[in-house]
Image 1 (cartoon, helix red, strand yellow):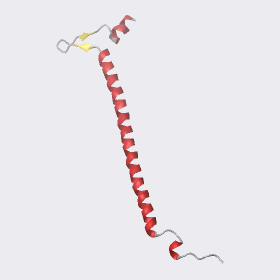
Image 2 (cartoon, one colour; image 1 turned 120 degrees about the vertical axis):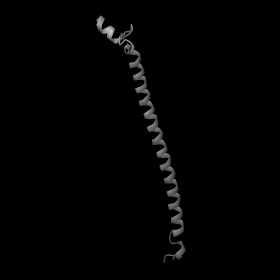
Image 3 (cartoon, helix red, strand yellow; image 1 turned 180 degrees about the vertical axis):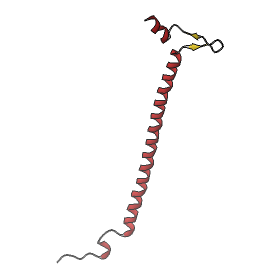
Image 4 (tube, one colour; image 1 turned 45 degrees about the vertical axis):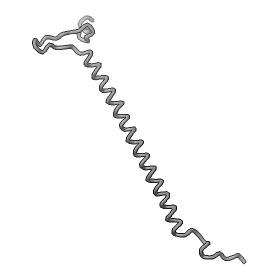
Length: 89
């Protein structure tokens, strides 16, 4: 005949289960916070990369554009101007 267990030995108590759930909840919150922080950093880095690209393209376009004298309205064409290269071709 099998030995009967006492009622207190048949399984986990409610306090133990609540303790386990509390630990899981705390770990989950920490994991979500870390995930959100990482995603925010990735978005910021992506924005900075794209913004840097836009700035470098704007700077390059500024250096390659023709200059206009606002007092006389004449175009001051430089040697490296795309317009002058197109006219020579």
